[in-house]
Image (cartoon, rainbow, N blue to C red; front, side, top):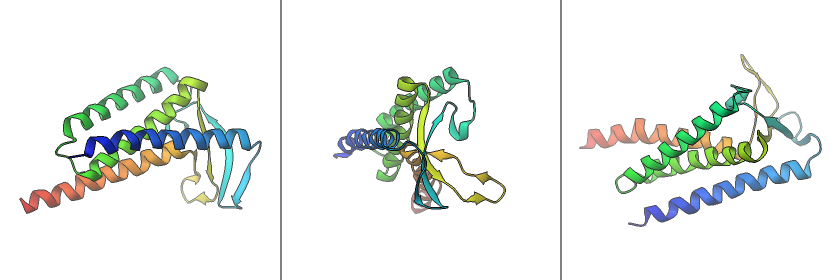
Length: 160
């Protein structure tokens, strides 16, 4: 089985894409760029907190949590790569891409570089957070994990 070999390139390519897009946004944009006016802008921003700028000012806690999550995910992958579904392995890989991409930003700059700005106000939420490729990878990875564990695992259990 060749599963372990796709995992490392997935994570490395994902991190490279994340870091390149952050570099391009922060070196190519000096102000807000309206990709789709009123809907999607590229707006360079510095996030010193966690998701949605939570825990701003608690960088040691965020760094420690990120290191623990990254280690746990790598351990889960190591323990399950032979028996886990490809979807679950993709989910773990994407969450690792996001965690490592943002961790590298925190270590290098002391904050995470965000630039994707979904502009329309969302009812009961207001302005959505400015985010980056790493954040997208985490969200997609968590979604794939939920699909894998909630629906596919149940389907496999019923079939057995």
